[in-house]
Image (cartoon, rainbow, N blue to C red; front, top):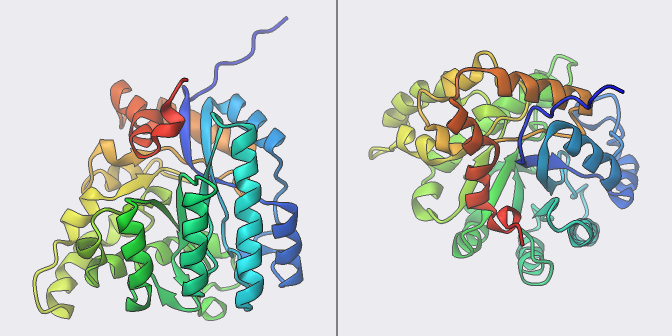
Length: 323
C-alpha cells in the first residue's frame, strides 16, 4: 500500500478562491456568459469538490468570492436579488464548514444604493469576512469619485477587500480573440490600482485592506513608470511606491519564475498571501503551482509560512482560530 503524497502547502489560508452557486450559474447562462471572459465554460464547483482539492494541496481554509463577470447583468433589481442569494448561499457554506470556508461578499455595483445595503447585510447579518470588488463596473474604475460613499463605509469597517479583474469595456478591440484572463486581466488590475492611488483613495481611506491578485498583475513591470508619470498628471506628489509597498498581494496564478522576484522589489514578504484561483484554475494546476511555490527558494522557510498562513490570519483572524 503506497503512502499518500505530502501536500505541498501546510495549513494554508487561500484568499483567492471562487464559488459558483446554481443560481449564479443559471443567471450567467441567461445573460450570455456561458463562456465567461472567453474561457471555455463555467467550471463546476461544489463544497465537496472544493474541500477535496483543498485537502490535496494543504489548504486549511478558503475565502470564497464570485469571480468575473459578477452579479450585475444590466438590471439593478435583478442584481440586488442575485447578490443577496449568492451571499446567503456563501454564508450557508461557511456555516456548514466554519473552519474551512470564509466569505468575501459580492455587491450589486454599479447600483450604489443597492451595494451599500448589501454591504450592511453581508457584515451585520451574514457575518462576512470581507468583500470582493471588481476592477470596474460599467466602465467606471474603482478610483472614480462615484464610489466615495462605498469606500467610506469600507474604511469605517476596516474591510478586507479582494480586487478581482473583469473584461475591460473595450475587450472586443483589445483581446485579439484570446481569453481575457490571458492579457486583459493583468492590465485591468493595474488600471484599478493605479486609479486608487492617483485619485487619492488609498490616502483618504487607509483603513481598507486591499488585496491585489495575481502577484501584482502588471504592476511589477510598470510601478516605476506609474510613479514617474504621477509627477506629470497630478499637481502634488503622490507616493506611488509607498502605497504599493503597503498593499497586500496574493500569489494566485503564475507568480514564478519571474513575477514574484519582481514584486518583491517594491513590497515586503509579509504582504504576500496564498491564492489558488480554484475552480477557474483546475485542481491539478492548483496543486502543481503550489508545489512550485513551495519548492522555490525566493522565500525562506519562515517567509513561506507567513505567505501560506500567518499574513492571511492577520487579515482574517476568524479563520486562524483553532477553537
